[in-house]
Image (cartoon, rainbow, N blue to C red):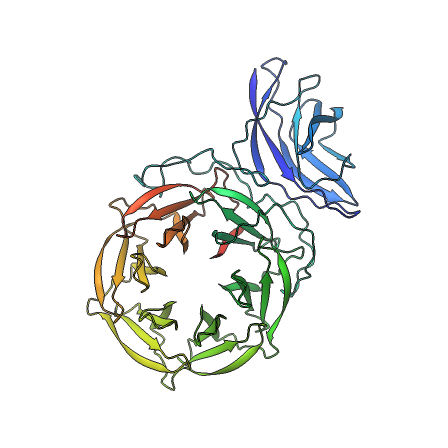
Length: 484
């Protein structure tokens, strides 16, 4: 008979210690056993003192198999009775995978359907539109329960966001100019990168750092700090008020980190926007105080130190206004601000000068937006160099675009698709996935754990949609950022 097995991809560290990063992969395995034998599955992988420890749910003895890029499936244990078993890996390798079978069976016949190290995630696609309640057809809710990498690394440490860099790189494949998703586990503190293919499917993944990050730290901004063309991280601790940068390598791994400023920020201030203000190629920060209504800028140097700071304007903003998006509207190379008033429904723009002063402001449209609509994304759709807006209505499930002119007037608006999206789906990120100059959408379902992409045409219509990965993500993981 043929059964489906869950196996794990991993990495064997190059030093004495072994670090494992798992990712759920479906394997088709031939058995010579009777149909009454339950399907055995690996449920966990850990590393302890240089050994790999696996756990499984089999109710009968199993054989354990290992495969590397240089060695085909090899049986590393036979007739294991214990539900947990540890072994020293026989080889040092950049990657491996494990599976279990009933005793005396043949080596596994592998048909990869999930993502592996540099491999594809071509299974479970949902091409051809966004009909029904989900952003993509297929991928039923509740299937699977994996992490973005099913990380088996421990959750110890991580009290601060200043993390140690190192060469313990995960299975990320360097791919400059391709979109990455950044996941943060609020429980374990682990940070993961997902690298996407041009078709929006998962290509590879990896840890962003060895250290774990405490839950008090929030990944509040993503953008290029050191002008290397690779987006970096900005962390804000709501308790301590400190702000930390992470400079990343091309493969998404941490190169260096430190404090942006030694000053602690009061918890009344929120890091509400990241973008280049002074046109020096380094992202800058925008802070909004909901109590005082003031807006402050931080201009950064390319070494992530604070260049200057100040008030954007001396006028205080009413707490009914939310700084909902930043992006260049008037094509002058300086980011501008978009404000949404949840009570009145009005949307206001602020055009900025490169010295962080206010150039102009006004209503984007005289029409008031119902509070059921949320401004969920800002980016260029129609390739005219001016950012556009994406609205999502959690009640009706509809998604609407606003195309803007460079004078901040409304050019056109309409539905991205006629289909309504179930409220279990959250519009969690935008970015150009297929490198066509038009932003695309990323949806995350907190209940099922699935992640779906929408590729857009430049007229804001839906080009295609599909699952990013067939694996479901545990609700402890949050899609915290999207970048290059």
